[in-house]
Length: 433
Image (cartoon, rainbow, N blue to C red):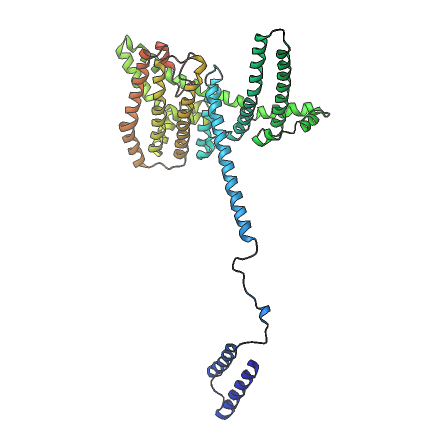
């Protein structure tokens, strides 16, 4: 029917063209378009309704479900990475605080903090200031799970001791000792198998101890296990942190020795004490940045290059002032802890506060050095540095010198406490530990 209408309309157009002559091209096109539109407006019963194409409202079947599962998986990965990063940071915090309470091992803690400052100074990225958090998360999970599993042997051991005291000749104490031996052996095997697989929480939930025994007892298994353990220990880079901490300690002590000695003599000779306070104030406003440059380059000379620090101040004065202010202000509250002698078994508690205050200060020092190396020198920055020096850094340096001087009257170690510069030297506020 529609096709017949189109033919009738075209015949009429042809008759009109013959009688009136060829019309202009635009009129011909308009007539043809009108006929096509009239034909399209009529219903087409020749095409079955069952074959009509109707687009789906929700896209492909199951596409929304796949998108939802992908979004949930992405959120899960972000949460897992955040939790792993936070756990690694807490593990590092605990380990550094524990190392700060032992002689010589304190240099490892100082070396790590200097490495943090040096990496940020070389790259300019604060995110690189959390060195080895993935390794710390792995080792921390092993230590935490091993400690939790040792709760059962402690309980059984206590019961065995009580049974031995109640009935020394009885069989109950011997049976409990046998159970204790079996439980301890299983815990050692369980921990070793989980650490062999990777040391994460899921590995402790399913350690596969039989597979671990087969791999270790296979030909060459013991040598493989030994090489793997040695590789894991070598990845910690303990010698590097030790020597870097020693370099930072020697450079800092060399700069602080003379001002501190003059400050110690101030009780008998006020003039020497005043000179020592001025020199100490001048040193402490440069020492965090000097140690950051030493850690970034690994050279002794960088730890005494005051000219480079002055040049950096003129390029990034506000960031340098923020780094020095954070170092001095965050270190000052720890001097209050010297009023009361802390028990030796609780010495790691002040170290927690020390590491928590020293870490951001080292990050800022490295960031200031990096920003100075990437910023051109401008005259107004030098003017801003002089204003910052007079208005901020000089008062902070003098106040820090006064606090250090007064600690000789509040600390249990007397004059020796003047050399306990935990913000720059050994990362512990007490020499007695």
